[in-house]
Length: 500
Image 1 (cartoon, rainbow, N blue to C red):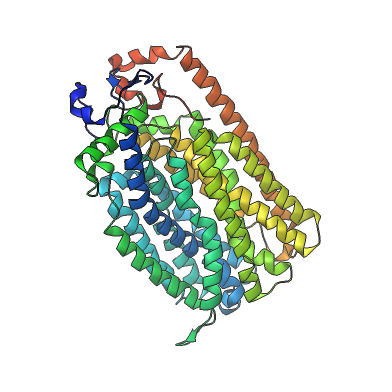
Image 2 (cartoon, one colour):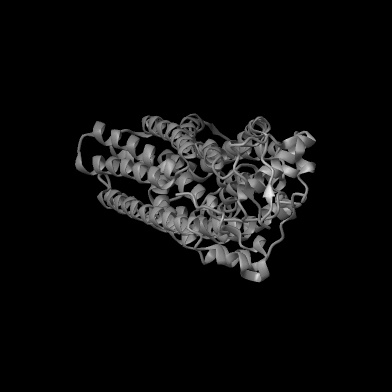
C-alpha cells in the first residue's frame, strides 16, 4: 500500500461524510483516520468489479481448462496413443504439481515488483504455449516434460490473483470477488467438457481427436493473455480509469480497513523484509488454514481430473461421459457464487466451510453406498456443490487474517504450496484397478473432508479466543514493542480483528 495518509484530514476532506454514529478508525501510528463517503466507496467497488474481476475470471477459467483437459483427452484416446500403461497416466498428472508447489511463495513476492498487470497475464501466455505443445507430443517422456513446464508456469497464478484482489478490496469484500473468479473452476469442467467433445472430432494433419483439445485451447489461452495485459492495472494507485478523487478514496479505504496493521495505503510503496516472511510462517492461522486447504484440495483435484473417468465407470461412454460432466460442474459454479456472497455478507468463513464439507461427504457416501448409476451420478452434484465453494473460502480466510502485503503474500503462497502437496494423493486416488466402484478413492476423500471440518472448528475457536483477548486489552502491550513502532505489528496490532 503506499504513502501514509497526511496527519491533517483536510487533504481527504472530499472523502469524508462524518456522522455522530461513525466510530473512529485507528491507524498504524495510533492516529484517527477520516471515514470515507459511503457513496464514493460503493462507486469505487463497482468500478473495480467491472474493470478487474472479469479479467481474473477469464484467466482462472483458462487455467483450470488447461490443467484438467488431460482428463477429457484420456477418454478420447490419449492413453492408447501414448501407451500409458499402469500408473503412467497418474505420474503424468502428478509431475505437474512438483514445480507448481515450489514456485508459489517466490512468485507472490514478484507480483508487486514486476507489476501484476504484466506478471499475471505473462504467466498465462507462457503456459498457453506449453499447453498447446502438449497436443504435439508423441511419447510418454514428452508428455511428462510438457506437464512439468505447464506446472511451472501455472504455479504463481492462484496466489497472485488472491494477493492482487487484496490490494483492491476490503477484507470483507474480497471473498465474493474471489468467488466471482473462482467459479470459473467448476465452469471449466462444464465448458471444457463441451469444448472437448467438439474438438475431439477434428482429424487433420495426422493429428486425430485428443491433440486438438490441447492445440486449440492453448491458442485461446495465448490470445486471452495478450489481451489481458493491455487492460489489467497493477495497483489501485496506478489505475488510469479512476478519477483523482476515486484514486485517493481507493487508497484511503485500504488503510482504514487495515485497522492498524499497516501505515501504508498504497501497496506500491511497501518494501520487502524478512520479518514479514517470519510473521506469515510462524502463525497459527497460516498453519491451520494451510492444512485445511490441503484437505480440501484432495477431493477438488481428484474430482476435476477424474470426473469423466468416474462417469464412464457408471456405464456412459466417450461423448455421453463428456456431456454428463457438465451439470454437476454447473451446480458447483452457482454454489461458489452463493457461498462466497453469503460469507462476505455475514463476515464469516469457518461456519460455511463446515456446512459445505458436510454436503460433499454426503455426496461421496452416495457413490459408495449405492450401486444405482442414477443415485451415484446424483452424488457427484453434492460433491461439486460442497468442495468448490470450500476452496476460495479457506484461501480468503487466511488472506483476511494476514497483514501487511508481504506477510499476506508469503502466507497465501505458503498455503497454496502446502495445499498442492495433496495433488500427490489426489492423482493416485482413482486407479484403473479400482474401477468401477473406486471405494478407496471415495473413502480417502471422505476422510479429508472430515479433517477439513475439524480444522475449521479449531480455527474458529482460536480466532474467537484471540479476538476476545484483544477486546479486553490483553494484547495492548504490543504497542510498546520495537520502540512503539506500531506499523511493524501487522496482524498482531491490538485493533486488528480476525475473521472467523
